[in-house]
Structures are given as C-alpha cells and as structure tokens.
Image 1 (cartoon, rainbow over the protein chains, first blue to last red):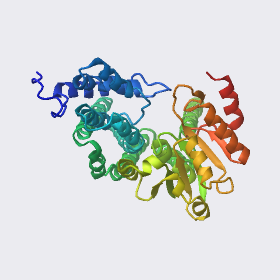
Image 2: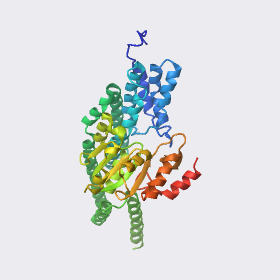
Image 3: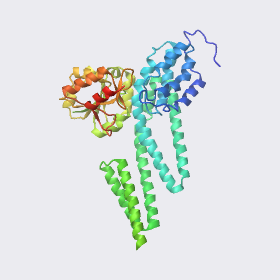
Image 4: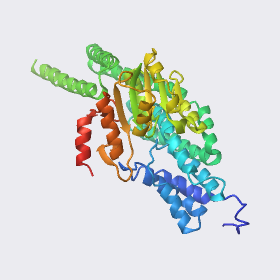
Length: 265
Length: 164
C-alpha cells in the first residue's frame, strides 16, 4: 500500500519493505549470470530492480537507473549483500534529489574490492574450511548424517550474515564500513582457521585410532608416518592439490601391495 | 624496494591480499590513486580489509615518493587503477631502475576494449602505454594470481591483434 505522495520535492523517497525483501531474495542469485565482461553486473542489476521500480515511477528514469547498475561489478557474493543494501540507500538519496546519480555507482566501485578481500579471508579461507573440517570429523564419528547437519548449520550462519549485511548497508550507507570493522572479521578468521586445523587434527587422530584397532599398531604407525610426511611436505611449500593426489596414489598402491603380499603368504 | 607494480581496476581486493602479498612476502601496500586518496569511504574500507601487520598507504599518484619506496627496506606492492595511472606514475618518477615488474591483474571490459586474458581487456591507447613501458625496460605481464602462467608482452600483442 503506497500512501498518497505528499509534495514530492520534500518527501524523502523510501523503498517499501516488500521491495526490500524481494531485492534481498534476488541478491541470493547474484552469481547466476556471472560473465567475463561484467562478472556479477547482471545479477546486481536484477537484484536491485524491484527497489528501482519502487523509487522511479517514470520509465525513463527507471531505465537510466537500471543502466547504471549494469556496469562492471564483482565482489564476494556474501559481502555483496551489504553493497546491494547500501546501493539502495544511495538510490533513495538520488531519488530524493539530495545526491547526484553517480552516488550509488561510486559506492559500489569503492567497496567491491575491499569487501571482497574481507569476504575471501573470512568466508572462503576460514569459515567454510572450519565447517568442512567439522563435517569430516562428524562423518567419522557419527556417519554421513553429520554432513547434512553441518551443511544446514553453515548455511544458517551464512544466511544470517547475508541478511544482516544487507540491512546494515541499507540503513547505514557509508557508515557500514565502521560496522563491519567492529565485527573484527580478520581476528575471527584467524581463530576459525586455528579451530579448523584442530578439528582436522582430531579427525586424523580418530582415523589413526581406528586403523590401529582394525589392523594393528604397525598400520597406525604407517598412517602416522604418512600424515607426518604430508605435513612436512606442505609446510615446506609443496602445493596442496598435487600433494593430495600423490598421497592418495601412494596410499592406494601401498594397500594393493600389502594386500598382495598378505594374500600370497 | 618495490617488488611489484599491480594494475587493477578494483584496486585492493582478495586476489592481492590472499595470493600476491604472501607469495612475494610483501611488507607494505601503497595504493597510488587520486580518487581513492580523496575518498574517506575508500580509505576506511581499504584500511579495514588488510591485517594489522600490513600497513596500507593511499596517496595521490603525484605525491608518491617512488624513489624513497624503492630505497626503503620494506617490500612494497604498488597498486594503480589503470594504465593511465601508470603513465602518470612514470611522469612522477617511476622508472625500471626502481621496479622491473608490472603486472596487469584486472582491467574490465568496456565497449572498445579487446580481451587479451580472461581478466584483462585493453583499449588501443592502453596497449600503446604498455608498449611504451616495455620499450623503456619494464617487464610487462598479465595474470590475475601468481599461480597462473604469466602472459608476456608478445602474447598480449598477438591476442590484441587477433581479438574482437
């Protein structure tokens, strides 16, 4: 329900809640039309469109607004929610006539890089590996159902972050940066990485313990030796993926060889 | 010393902080960009996204003391937004004696630009600027992250000529 517009020159333009909710929903599909030229540009324009429709009744102005959001955009997909919210904050100011039309664009261009860096550091290299390690340990201890539980938990955390960032961007505009600073995400990331490494260690211990119980202490010692060799290789700068492949191949080869020796003796 | 000059439309972002900084053992990042230096929002956001152990300076191109950075003990990653920024940095005193390597990270598509790598699109004027850099003695390469194979000037020329 839109109230009859009072004198349009003085009333600040506001995006109704329903449109905000639609923008947030659409922002979840930010990367669905990722492309080399504009990267997340189409996803961004698609997401913010309901807000632009609410702000610009006149088709020519709406088109102009939509076009400015079709320019290049790329950030971390979760952190981008904050930029989508902040862009609406600025679009409201443009629609109210208190800010030039470049405002939302400058905001996007300024924040996309730094927020991508924060998001990569926190979500991709800390939170996600932490939950991955949790899933691995959970699967060892409680079976495959643990993986489902961890996936749900990760996405609950991720969703709360996205919604919170979207609202913070919308309400605070440029002050968003101070709010994100208060979250101390890099510090939290360090702790999560340490905790994730601890979980990996616990998973390895469970593995060794079971190997020992099933195949005797020699098997456990071999597995510990292999894990130690892997650690030394990685700590000395070996690349992760080739190391993992080599470890898998050596493990499978050793299993075959031992099986053969056992079988023929 | 200046370890690398990076050209990136997005300035400071994850690729730089997660890959280049650890790979090169960078001690300090200098962002040479007039718009960023003039924007409180940009300065706050860039300061926020780096760990406390890595100082970031954001300065207008004309104010950067390239000679001082090259002579200092810190390993510096120098960041400019586009080849036009490089041109101005050269006018302000950046020479191959101070830093050899110029890395093109992300130069976004705009009408009139041709693609030379997945993340680098160049205009004719920018290609000219790169030629001039190479002729002066800079080693120009395009790649987003250090684990990719670098694309050198010869390949950039070839792909630009073949590009659409």
